[in-house]
Length: 149
Image 1 (cartoon, rainbow, N blue to C red):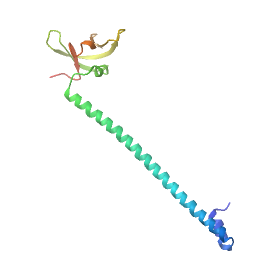
Image 2 (cartoon, rainbow, N blue to C red):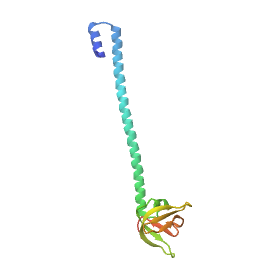
Image 3 (cartoon, one colour):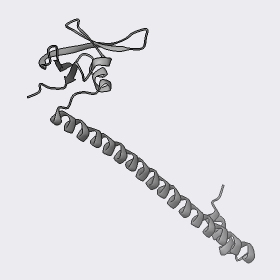
Image 4 (cartoon, rainbow, N blue to C red):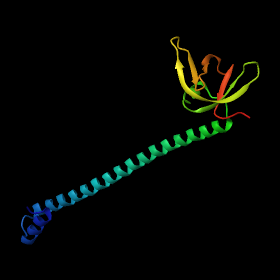
């Protein structure tokens, strides 16, 4: 099968079908223009897709960086852990302070697991087999990521 350019060349050589030849050349040129536009659109679509992927990765990295900064700040400040944070500390050491006789005493312990009881109350079980309940957290006892000064 002959290509469009080969058919046009034959017709030009023979000097036949001038009108048809004119339309074939227009068709060839439009087809070429359309092919160029299509290639450009595909390239721009890929560029747009790459830009979107980059922006999503940047947003995710920015979120990760924000979370890391918040974590570092929290680590440096050494505020008492919230109950939600403490529940995530399973298997990790924490500095526990309790107030048995109106005086805070502190020691290291490791969170074993969270216990939830039938009445919906929660307690933290430490590897030392001690239970500390949520109800008294911040009143009679509290926990920190590192030893308080």
